[in-house]
Image 1: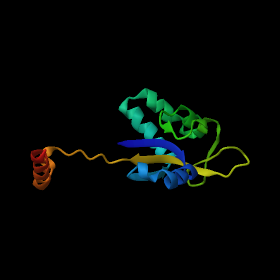
Image 2 (image 1 turned 90 degrees about the vertical axis):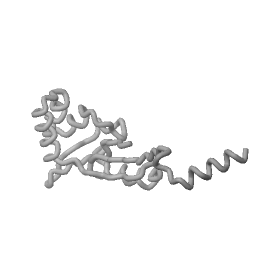
Image 3 (image 1 turned 180 degrees about the horizontal axis):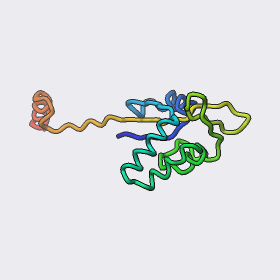
Image 4 (image 1 turned 180 degrees about the vertical axis):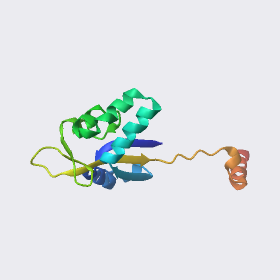
Length: 135
């Protein structure tokens, strides 16, 4: 199972410390101006106008965050202050009195292992047959 959310780097670090057992891998990728431009171009070429319209707002990061269909870690990200820094990385702050943080994608993955009887070792199958014979 894979989950992608829009998340601040500071929220990601807090979440990583508290709920790390829920996911097998957790990764943070900063959102950059170049990535948003590539996404807009890709969806335009693909012909998906709805999603392409969302990514066309890459010049106005506040509008992009408000319109994106990517799940947000917190519902109140829409009203925050956004800007690009000199490297083109999307930065965010809750209000003027707060510290800036990097906005990015949190990618959380949980590996689900499903074994068929064919995949189980013969020793395990033999143990189960012995247990069933005793009852």
